Length: 127
Image 1 (cartoon, one colour):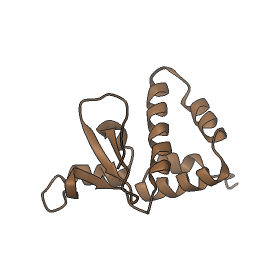
Image 2: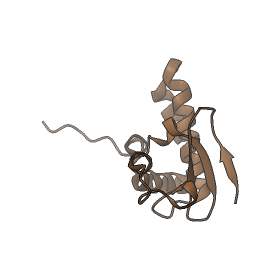
Image 3: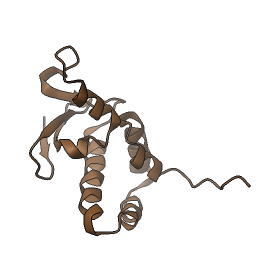
């Protein structure tokens, strides 16, 4: 099992993919996922994840979660002094079609609305 570290913060959460790959992610970034945030907030013994790791739902593979975490880290870095919209465009432009589909699936299962909507086509307003 590989363990990956992301950006330095005080508190971390360990995310485990179905393929056994684990990622140690700063809690503030992991909270972008509604599913992970709910698990973190539950905080009771009955709902505590086995081995301290939060299982990532939906059969999300490690390589896909790595791409999602890279998005979280990059977006966090530019949100303070950069252009988040431009970052989003560059992030999406650098992905192959297959990876885009995998990330959409991961965003859906993680409850990561911002990332999910990044790939949604614009809808014309009703007149």
